[in-house]
Image 1 (cartoon, rainbow, N blue to C red):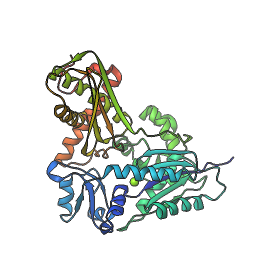
Image 2: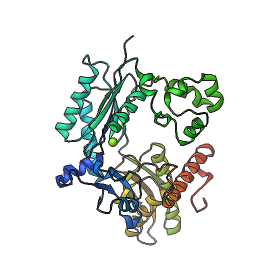
Image 3: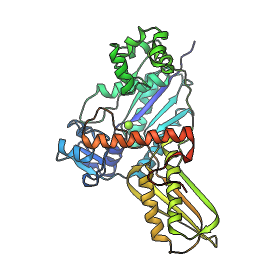
Image 4: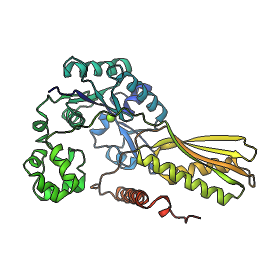
Length: 395
Ligand SMILES: [Mg+2]
């Protein structure tokens, strides 16, 4: 039986690495890309030097500054991150046609066709990303996606320096289960804080301890997830590389059966369009930094305007706020509108979701909002678009 060669690659502190290319004087300094503290901004990415002080992604910027008052806060250049990301992905295609981009700075590659050893393929890729694009990156290599991704995380965690880890972690065929065994269960794909707590109750803390539990028992306790846990704990994962492209923008538009010149009605439509765009973004786990408005007048002339947000967002309140500003700036009261459209581009991953155990009051409020949004999303999934709206009633 031939084993697949699956590589997971993750750019190290990607946004910060790009910022260092833009301004080399940042090299080695404690800095973060994120929103301003007075605007309740959040850290999107932080340099390894900043991590030494406990600064983390998704942390409110104000909190990060408490931890390290000299922390340099940089406003993100999200378009620059997207263009660098595209260059990385293009480079990866030199090594395989089977490339699956999973976020702005992460991808899986299937390099099974390459006769070279796992180590030399990984080193070649890392060297070209380092030298041709001047970006640090870490790689995990295994026979499948599950173990390759965990290998990257383990490789990165093993190297604690002020600089980028640039790690390479290889898990040879047959050693998947042994590699996973000592790791905490939370590192396993599908084990969130809730499942983690349930496992801790039956005194299971390490992945290897799951292997000792019969599949039937796991299914009794965890339902369908039990089957997956049984397989994943053994490092089994047959998922193929899926070569899809991440959308460049997501937009929705409505042509009215009759032109509308009523401001309240038009804004209600903007609300609905923002909701639909954000629902799609959330489903694809994307967020964007550019909000677009499209307006078509009764005579078919069309106008598009766009604006850039402070941080990537996929929240309909944010998108609506920007779309509304653009609308008010460009609409002459009473002028009939034939078509309205809202779009979001400059897509990348959302600011990482906050973890449940962070007890800071700001965090718990944000977390509650996030949980509420998640609940709304799944309600709509079950019961359709019209079930529930933020604040206002459907017409
Ligand atoms: Mg990364």
